[in-house]
Image (tube, rainbow, N blue to C red; front, side):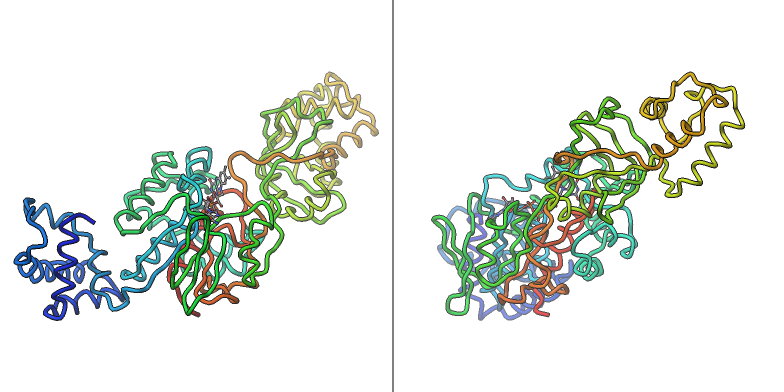
Length: 490
Ligand SMILES: Cc1cc2nc3c(=O)[nH]c(=O)nc-3n(C[C@H](O)[C@H](O)[C@H](O)COP(=O)(O)OP(=O)(O)OC[C@H]3O[C@@H](n4cnc5c(N)ncnc54)[C@H](O)[C@@H]3O)c2cc1C
């Protein structure tokens, strides 16, 4: 706080009993700070407190113009000074998307709170920075919660409740109100118009600063307990008491990383990776790296796992939405299989082999003399078609009428049921998340409050909630952060 802030605080505190009008005005802000009431309160405080304070010899160096000084006065400082609940202290653990949004939400819902955000590293919002390839896929354009929920392999019950309180439309509006337009791509992903994640970082940091949220870097919290009615937070060279705590410490790759929360009674779902691509070191299809089959269906043999969508061939195996979706929905099963399994690909996404057979025969009858290389299914890229012909041992120059019944059956089988061996996984560079974390059974899904530790709330990826790619994970961070920041008690 600048010297004038100190001066004003001290004079207003000293003369608080003499200032019923301004105190009442500020007190009313605790519930619903409207622009009118905040302006009124600020004016009331300044008009009454400044002249009184000015007669005290607290400082002799007030040389700034009143206009300049007024500009520097932080509304939230006043709110804190006058509020009856000045002692409500809120700690937010984690300086990522969820932590920042939770802290901002606390300020919106509880203007009087004293908010401190603890970040273990020396960097804030580091995942936001690298997200979406540096562009930050902030949310998804889908505004129908029923459809949106399908993007969450885990945590649907919780997301259903929080999306009602903070939807994708709310995210879009929230950023628009801060001057950031989110633009939708044809697949529904939404990015800031600047196409830079720094825009989102600047916005969140700016809000935190403006709202007087205190940020402590290199402040890792690794123990929470209750002492004489308040919460004690402990870390290396750190000990502090608080009234409420929001844990937004992100996903932990190992259960051990969540031991401090298990110790106080929370159930932990074992963490495993989600959103990864498939390694296929022995498969020659890797030659086609960079090629996209626009509409395939993929199943994992021996399981019920199935997904559909575009498939991208890479120099290490397979990626793209169809594979990433499979990795997300199958995160646990595939981990149990030690990432060694076979996938069946239907390159035409048509489940029925008989339909494909009839379709193929009709094509051959239509152009019997055409070389088979030039008679592909339009939805398949030419290079993939030639690859499949070679795999089926059919010379590319063979004419349709020269194909044997066995040739036709072999090719159709490959088209509908091509099998590949997966050996290992690679983390998707654009976005990866942890499946597992704090069990939903330990959390009140309406408020994000812990069921086992009073006045403790959760937000973000630390929860056993995760989505597929497309902005759904940040949406979960914004929405759970917003709800946790209400500090509701159910
Ligand atoms: C490369 C990459 C790209 C991604 N791109 C996208 C995308 O475009 N769209 C999307 O929706 N999702 C994306 N995601 C997922 C998304 O980034 C996460 O789901 C989201 O950041 C989770 O936010 P969070 O605040 O819960 O956790 P985090 O962002 O992980 O933040 C947690 C913070 O808490 C701190 N912390 C941890 N433990 C403690 C402790 N004990 N004390 C104090 N501080 C602690 C950490 O240092 C960290 O700063 C991406 C993920 C990755 C890895």
